[in-house]
Every structure is written in structure tokens, then in C-alpha cells.
Amino acid sequence: MQSIEVIEQLDKDRVLDDFYWAQFGFEGDLTMREKILCVTIDDVRRVGVSTFQAKHVCEALDISMALINHHFGGRNELIAEATVLAYENYVEFLWEATNNAKPEPKARLRAWLEESVFRNEQGRGWGALLNYPTASMEVATVLEQVHRKRMTDLGELNLARLLTLVGDVKKNRVSQANFTAGNIPRTDLLKNVANASMAASIGWSILGLSVWKSGGHYPSGATREVGILERKIVKDHIDRLIDQI
Image 1: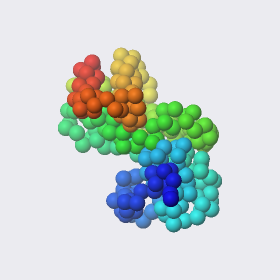
Image 2: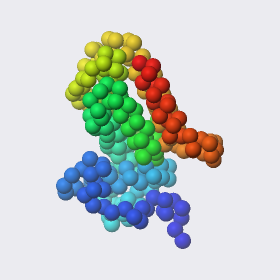
Image 3: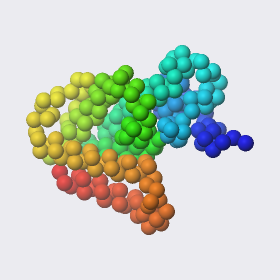
Image 4: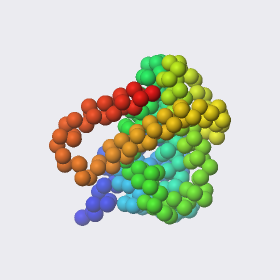
């Protein structure tokens, strides 16, 4: 009999086709290295870092563990690099949703906030590592030593976009915010302390909601009324955040 760990990580309904790879930002023919990263992101978001086993990625792709060691060096290095790609996808999904929204300041900010909650819930297994590095000190050490700059650049890009959206709501305008990771107008964005403070409050608040949604808050998980009212409560919370501006 397979263990719970194997049953949870191996997705028997998964089809490794073009549609599957596209959800991780890839198109066309992928290298095996890229496929390993995609399956790792998928598996971690379902079972979390502590349960994740690289050998099950090998089973899914019909490869040997030696190939993972060749490309990444080991399990922790694989997870660390997958973390960067998963977070990069998250940042770009938020901005894609923003740009697909109605070209109106509040609608764009709402789209960013709603997408943040949705993507955190969908990728729930990554929440512990991204928000609480002590969930896996080995992986966190690799992230710090190898990927710190990239993660910081992506985090600042996400924050710069949020700052712009908040400023747009206050001034009733729509800015293009054509920033790229590692190239943002830091001084210009931070000179308005009120905007920066408001963006921080909104960011912290939506992070709290996202962590609660993605983690399936255990103490309240069986409270029937919470589940029934959840959609309205989430909408009202986002309404209040926008109304504060």
C-alpha cells in the first residue's frame, strides 16, 4: 500500500501537456530541467515543503534522481530554484489580472488584491516557506546564498506596482507602471510617505487574508458559519481596504 505522502504528492489525473506547462509560464518545447521545476512547483503547492519528496518528481517524469542532482545539486537546491520561479509567476499573475481589469483605478487595485488571495490559496503549499523561512532552514539557506537578489528584485517589483495602484486610486488616474525586476524608480515611489504607508497597510492586510485562506485555518476550519459567509466576508474586507484610500 502506498503511503499517504505518496498518494498526496503523485497526481494521477495530471496530464503533462502544453496546457499544463503554460500555467508555469512556459510555451513550446521544454527542457527536462524546466519540466522538473514545473512539477516541483505543482507538487509543493499541494503537499508543502516538508512532505515533498524529489523522488516522486522523478516518478512523474520517468527520470532518475541522478538527473535532478545533475541539474540542481539536490532536493534543497531544487526547491529553492522552484521557489524563485513560483514567486515570479505569482508576481506576474497579479499584474496580468490588473491589466485585464476595467481600466479604472479601483477596479485595477481590486483585481490585484483578489488575484493575490486566489493565487495564495491555489499555491498554498508554498505559503509556509515564503512567509516563514524557518519552515525549512535548509532551503531558506540556499535561497539566501544563491537567490537573494532575484527574490528581492521580484518583491520590490510587486511592491512598486502596489504603490502605483494605491497612488492611482488617490489621484483617480491609471498609470502604466512599466517597471521590471531590478529596475524600479525607488526614490520617486517612496517620496510620498502617505502612499507608502497606505500601501504597506493594504499589503500586510491582504497577506493576512491570503495566509488564512491558503492555510485553511485549522481552528476555524470546521465552523460552518465561517464557510457560508466566507465569500461575502472576503469581498467586504477588500471593499474596506479600497475605501480606506
